[in-house]
Image (cartoon, rainbow, N blue to C red; front, side, top):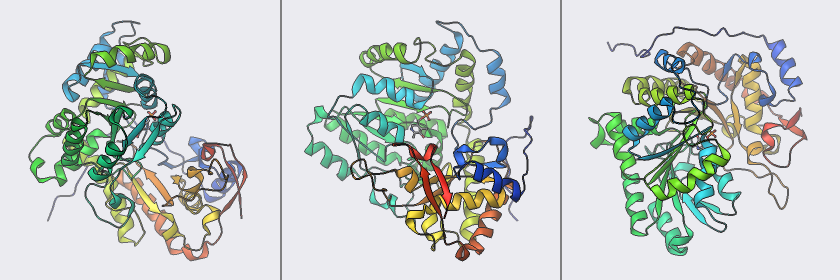
Length: 458
Ligand SMILES: *Cc1c(COP(=O)(O)O)cnc(C)c1O
């Protein structure tokens, strides 16, 4: 008999949760205009809205917080973080920022001009926002397999090398400031990029003299998948894999709220002194002096520790196995989810789940609300509400997939919580044919409507 798998840590401090009843939840969600972003956190039992900034820090990180150096310039906390960035990613130059999009803002202010083309693998929404805000264009070169939720391809985050070279050929190289590889590919469902793909993208970029940037929010989860799924890396440590991954890139931006296992923070890593000097000016304007960039000293210290902790294979195995634990329970029950299971979240295919709800009544949002009512679990709609309206025609844009995302915070919930989530979804699945109507919009903002939209029941 195999030993049961268990967590690689134990719990030192707990935060009580309130288990509400159906009547309370029905009232709260109505008061929230059927928008899960409008709920108070104490109205939620298990919060799977996001894995961003919601992780639990270790006692080593809390100890580092207490030793944070809050000097304005040259704080020791800054040097601790600089050392971690050098040792882990190999970058000589680094700038702290208050979160990931701030790193994008600073670096893109330095490098992106109107009319530029920036190819990549399904750019994250803030990344795309910072590109388009500057009058440049993001071109998605992700492999086609990524869009088939049933295809069991091991590296659905990969770039299609031919698509990328076609962009290089049709555009002049000096109109492409850099290529972005997102690790893991969040938009495609937390799907990893293979080492081979990183190498091939790097070789192609060098051939055309185009720089490469890694959007690194989940770099360690990506490395874990390389170890498990790419045979040559089976016996390498996560640290060795990360070293090789970053040997292929020129720059990185990172939201530390994911694999930094801290609640706030971001950074830029660079090899070029020239870009560092230019970016430093924008960092001082937008973020703060270059030795803190919008972060408190204690937060930089906790991040320096978190970046090292996240490289521990036992931690990563605990983390990814929990996501798989939930995903496999749903698969066993016949619930349609995106496969293979990604690194940080489960994506439920809502159109295959609720077949009787018309597309124009927001199917994934309907499922998200059912799940909240059933068990107080908060997920998030990745569907028509998020996709917004076409800026010209003002018609709803229907994305290829209508998904309910259940993002798992790091080191926060136990597998008993995952059992509750699975049980709730299975109960809804059993009565799915009775659910035939969704929601209608009462009020919405002109852009990014999903955060503030007000809905009513149909
Ligand atoms: C979260 C995230 C960002 C943006 O980071 P914030 O810290 O939320 O500003 C950028 N890229 C990816 C892939 C992300 O997951």
